[in-house]
Length: 236
View 1 (tube, one colour):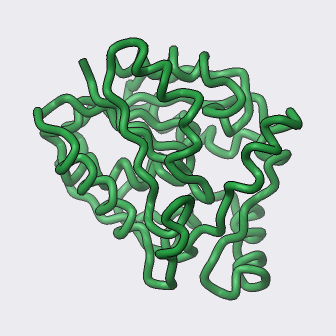
View 2 (view 1 turned 90 degrees about the vertical axis):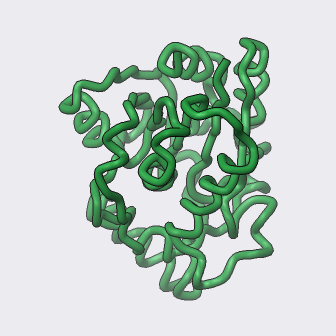
């Protein structure tokens, strides 16, 4: 069976997969949910030098230490982590059987998170970083804007979100040709403002399978069963 490595997006941590991981394990798979440096349970390590390269290395190290067999990893990246899993697949193409982008950036070499956002939203990021983020942190975004409306979900998510290191959004991704050896798939969440539709289209242009989920951006919280089913289908 496969080892699913689930990589969270900005402001989150490995904790956000708590509703999905047991469903994948029940299907017989191993599941790893690393937390990126500077957020979640590793928020105490945040500093202005934490960037995209740091986060790629976080996941590369997890795969090196926690997996044994080539071709066993199904790498899943949510939102910002589309940048991360692309870098990881380029570094460890023999280890990764498939990369799945969950409502995520699907970047090319030299692209950055801030450059891939729509200009209006990128402007909001820059304003919040310059203000409450003290010039080097991105404060958490509104969960309602991301499509979370249930009071229980809001109560679970809100106290766990942490500011995200700004450098990870401004640092360009550096990849080579090795990433093309790893097949990809895409899951788009369609019941919100659909910021990531251009990257679902990139996936279609590459001939990748693309699935749509009728939920908001935080699918691992708002639609865990449907998401697990999609990951099992695509990861197989």
